[in-house]
Image 1 (cartoon, rainbow, N blue to C red):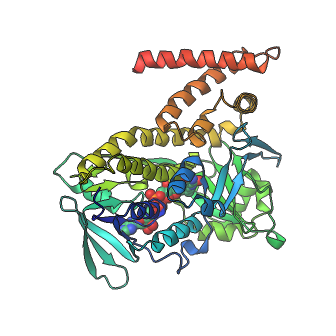
Image 2 (cartoon, protein in one colour; image 1 turned 90 degrees about the vertical axis):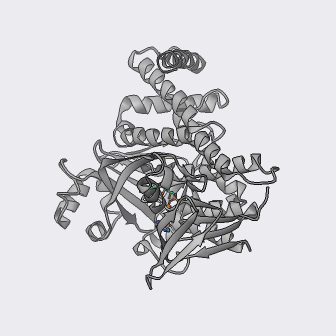
Image 3 (cartoon, rainbow, N blue to C red; image 1 turned 120 degrees about the vertical axis):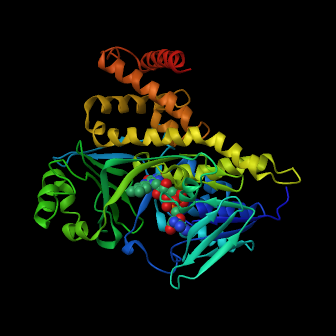
Length: 468
Ligand SMILES: Cc1cc2nc3c(=O)[nH]c(=O)nc-3n(C[C@H](O)[C@H](O)[C@H](O)COP(=O)(O)OP(=O)(O)OC[C@H]3O[C@@H](n4cnc5c(N)ncnc54)[C@H](O)[C@@H]3O)c2cc1C
């Protein structure tokens, strides 16, 4: 494959930086352009530490670019969900019965900085900050950028352009507004928004609550979660309806209301956030939405990846992981054509899209399912019993059983769409059997597993007959 090709990547977030690094490792000439200032030099997001859950699919992306071990140094393992009830009781629900399966809390800027550092080390990568993409000539693979400070415009041409400019993608907007091909686009918002808060570190960088878990305070319509940071603090995220609820963003308008709400719903958290109302009013409310669109490729010259192609709600902790997996899938296709003399970008971009789109649609739907599971189901007895049973299956029969969560999060050898199909059938099977009282005390764990498998197969068969 001829490497004498200029690649333009728009957006140096998590996906764009990893893609730039990997394309450079393959020998292409890469220009990576980012709207914001260099986050390694200028503190952003008002200095708040924002973290994400990194799991196996994301780690695989980092591995192919040789940065997995460096990334792991930024990670804190989270072995399960620590559920907090209103009375302050807690219990840990492991993510898996297999001891080696856990997710990781990682600093978003920390990981982004690592990827930028590694990309910048490559002699064939040029990174330009402070330049926002304004317009893309899709047919001729060139883009116009405006410099943040001076408003000066520059135009960059390439052989192929990758739009990795996130959920509000300017590249996607150009596809939407181009009338020479049919572009489908949907955006669905939840009625909830989110707000980040912080539990500061205790003395000597100690943790004010258990370190190695993703903490959840499920309250039905609203929910608080917290992920640990390396400095002892936790990044807390409140998910709350915008309006039409006893407590919602529209009516939490005074420090008294905020304290009343937290004292009622999250009393054990109040004492851990000393500047609660200050933080609440200083930090912005973020929207939660799903973006689906197609095609991702236009004229064989421009391709969307990451959130620009498929933004999802954060409840499966998979947005970044899916974006890193995009790079893996794309890289596999490049590898397939590596021995060909000339690059046919049209073929490569189309093949990537047709291989990937069902999977990103699946994780988008699973993420919405998990929103309901986290805020409501984690507190319900039948779901807790289901999790206990699944954890026991995974511990006792590690090769035979993977819960839906494990299929999505830890089994990157199967696709998101397959994980969704199998996982949903399993969930339905176990919940039905529990509800019907068919998983009795007298049965051995093996007998229970066999019954669950049989019921799952029957559901999969019915689905096959109904939906093909
Ligand atoms: C509250 C919340 C929690 C989340 N938690 C998790 C989690 O636990 N695990 C997980 O896997 N995912 C999580 N996600 C999802 C994750 O953040 C995204 O999926 C991931 O950041 C996507 O990476 P990206 O590079 O495609 O987009 P981004 O990270 O958004 O990067 C896009 C980049 O493009 C730049 N850009 C934008 N417009 C332009 C332009 N016009 N010109 C040039 N540059 C531009 C931006 O400045 C940015 O640097 C969460 C998301 C949210 C909102």
